[in-house]
Length: 194
Image (cartoon, rainbow, N blue to C red):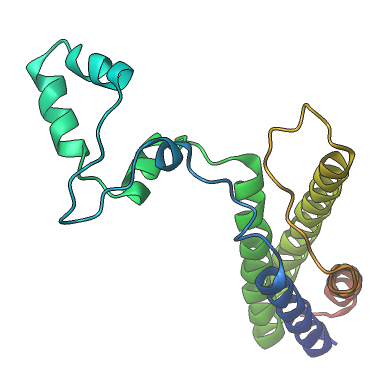
């Protein structure tokens, strides 16, 4: 029975991976505000003329240290500028996008150990991880559904970050396979004696 759960868990992980690959998560990220506001520098080309207000604020630098820093930072690529201006803590959405697949893979590793060794502790750890991963996945699904509804209704309170889109059938397949995996993992951990 543990092998059946392992195969079902692998199928669920495969469906989830395919769901991530075919989703719009990579395109749902907003453009970096610094990259949009600062002109792109191309090696070997002179920068465009700076407008009067920008030139006045650049000359108002109070210290030599700030002037040296600005001189160094003008050669930074847009990705580095965006990384410097990004918040230190990840957003909740980014955290969930990482935690759901990571929790599923770590739980899969514990279930593999349970399948090979039949140690009940490994089985219950795997069950706990899959249950937590399922809760995170349901929360992720709910948040994406609400964000899609806000985007469709044109809610002005929406911060402008587009909701990722997933294929409905794949979400249903992944969710139903995950629910079956959770149920069979609990049943197997209860029934199987070490």
